[in-house]
Amino acid sequence: MQNVLEIVTWYKNNLRDLPWRSTNDPYKIWLSEIILQQTQVNQGLKYYYAFVEQYPDIQSLANADEQEVLKLWQGLGYYSRARNLLKTAVLVTDKHQGIFPNTMEEILKLPGIGQYTASAILSFAYNLPYPALDGNVFRVISRLYNIHLPINEQKNRAAFLDILNEMIQGVDPAQFNNAMMELGAMVCKPDNPKCDICPVSAYCQSKALGNTSQLPVKAAKAAKKKRYFNFFYIKYNDGFYLIKRSESDIWQNLYQLPLIETAHDLDIKDEFSDLKDVLTQLQEVNDLLKKEILVSAASELRYLNSIKHLLTHQEINAKFFEVNCNEQPTFKLENCIWVNADSRQNYPLPILIEKFLLSL
Image (cartoon, rainbow, N blue to C red; front, side, top):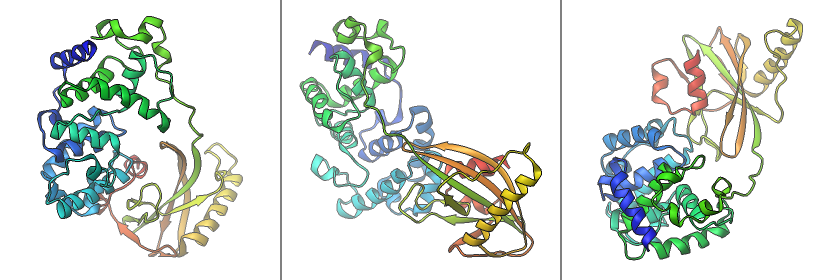
């Protein structure tokens, strides 16, 4: 118990002034937790402020158009979070009269909310004793108690929660959860932890054993799936074409350049390759383009560049080709829309496509 009190006292004296810590509004707490999944605080802050300004309460978010929400989310990645954000807002508004439920059972029924997020809402908004176990807290507990169970295996979660459930008893739940997460974020860091200023270094078993750099333990991850995307920047009449991704895949409901995915990387040589080889390769790409995307258009094709884009479980190897059309093209693909520099701002884009367009 003494170590818990020292962590909470340290937090009170050292906490960062973050906007979601000064409210018990479950909507704003939920919003901040969803934004901060897979996102650093410094990056997430501007998105939090933008969402609160545009959607000050859950009813206004529930009435929003998905495209508007995705556009506001653009750049954060993991776009399923944004889609679930809207779904949850609609459910809470329609089924719970706009008030977040205050039981674990009901909150877990909402899209995009797992045990961690539910515990955060219940403790921060309703001051209920549910420990919030995130990556920072996993690290603190692993080191404090010298636990060598892999933290990225679901079966080990219960062992950490048992410890936290005992620690949270008799203290303010919101302060406890905030204190544990803050300790992990600011002191018990992944690399070079600041043990000299840690309020519980005297109790830390891994510090005593000198093995903090070995904790927490993570099981080896599966290799990222490699995918090969060939994007076509099809220009016509001072604009170009976008298409909406509708399949259940990455970037669902976002807009991208017309795409051909291939099983292997297209062997397009760099600018220093033999010109004849380059022309031969581009002809092969042009044949593929006409077969999969364009029905007719007088066009000129050229290779622009390649970009490797890393997602959590996938490696996207993207090639970009420019297609200049002298007449309005006809597409085999459905839902290709023509946009110009101004109108494209209305469409949510994957960050890979946004960066490409900004580089032109």
